[in-house]
Amino acid sequence: MATAVELDLTGLDTSRIMDRLELFPSHAVGPTCGMRSQGGDKGVNPSAKWVQKIKGWGQWDQKITPSTVLQPASLPMPVEVAPYEELEPFFTHLMKDMSADEFDAHFDESKHIKEEVDRPVGKNFEPGYEPYYKTEFLEFKRGVVYSDRRMDLCKMVVGPSISQLMESLESNTFIEHFLLGNNIIGPDGAHAIANFLEKRPDAMRTWYLAGNCIDTESFSILVDAMSKSKVVENLWLKRNPLGPGSHESLFKLLSQLPRLRTLDLDQTALGDDCLSKVFEKLSDHYSDFLPIATPSPLHSLYMNGVGILPAKDGEMSAINYISKFISQQTCQLTSLYMSNNLLGDSGLKVLAEGLKKNTSVERLSLQSVGASTAGVAALFDALAGHPSIRMIDVGQSYATMDLKMQFNWIEEDIVESAVNLIKSSESLRYIDLGYAYMSQASLNIVSQAVSKSRYLQFYNARSLKNDEKAREGKAVNLEANKLKGLVKDRLTANVRVEWPGMDYEEWVGTEKRWLVNDQEDVRAIDSVYRNRDAGMARRGQMILKKWWTEDNKDVLQKASGRTCEWKNRPKEAEAVVE
Image (cartoon, rainbow, N blue to C red; front, side, top):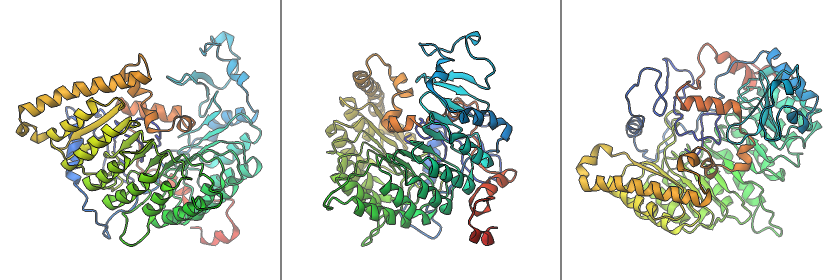
């Protein structure tokens, strides 16, 4: 899996986190394939169950009808607001400013935690460090600060205490990466952050604001303040209801922030018309034909589940302008994520035309865009000669059905384009076809190409026709088993060229994520809170709660849009607040 659309898990390997996402279910909802069941699904093969779901959902007819869901909802994960007394020790600590000396007091030169007798007494936190990366941190009851200048309050639910948090940071010169995912701060919170930015526009390089009920109006206020910054590099906004009226704010961000490398717009309810306006203006702003063609600073763009639609004959829509933008020499985009949009074959073909002229894109995620063989083949043909492409994912997103999107449906005729891409690309390291409606014999041909590649490090393709294996004959299935071993050996050998001595399983659990995501920018939002929950979900030790029930939906209603208690709202807005 390349990205997590419905979860606050960007940058993690989420291929085994597949429990359902429903907003107000009428019955108990539990895990589906990929997680150990808590009781009801013992003995069920997760892969077989997933195949059943894909085949049951079926192939999209690529028609937009009045009943078609054009874009997913923009909601945070269900949470309960934290009591202020649990947040106050962390806020107080932030207020006094910090330095590297504070970490030195708790860790020795080898980055090991000192014995308790050798550490300062009377502290409200416990020292620790991240697995694998060994970055030191100090963890409070709610809140973590890391030695690499991250502040982590993801899923700690600051809510109405956001003003106190921002006030505590006014004197703090240590924190540069602000992680506040799934805290439902609402428009009040956007105001508080905007007020902070007016005073200290260059304090933070990273703003991680996923799942905070920031709407169109409050987003505009936030952008007006943020656009004065000369240092903001990463802005993560997934699952905020920014809405179709945010086109001017988005263009302002993308044209005025000189160092903006990452923009995350996953599930922000923008829609095709909004994005069409944004990228039309952006293409003109960074046009190759200007006397001085200034490059766009943007490197990573997340647009999963934002409502991009198929291309229309004789009309320019969002995908046309996106394709135009990436075709220009001023485009420096390296990572483009557009899963769970109804692009269809027409959308992929238009995107392919832009990619033919592009030289910068390294990662391309197009899971569940309703494409068939024709669209995917056009994409592969366009990328066969691409100088930089490293990762391509055209598989199925595990959020497809929950978000009412459409699976990709690849059939036998993809073989020629897939094999040509694998053989011709020296930059390609990762290709995921997902579950394809292909015979084992056809998949064997692709596997043969993979087994001879000197460059690929990850490959995934499985058949939706497993129930027809017996009919293909013993020889075909024996060859499949043989190729499975050859492919594994080849991928392992290729990994060890770059990471000598590392076994393949270790690589999958550590370095593989950086084929899918930009390491510099995604490391800046790594959260121990999100990582712990994701790890427990993968091990079947918990079910991630992702639906709002009748019992807790009032928490969401108080935080979202105009139903939020917006103390700083303009006077003229008071009359229309419900």
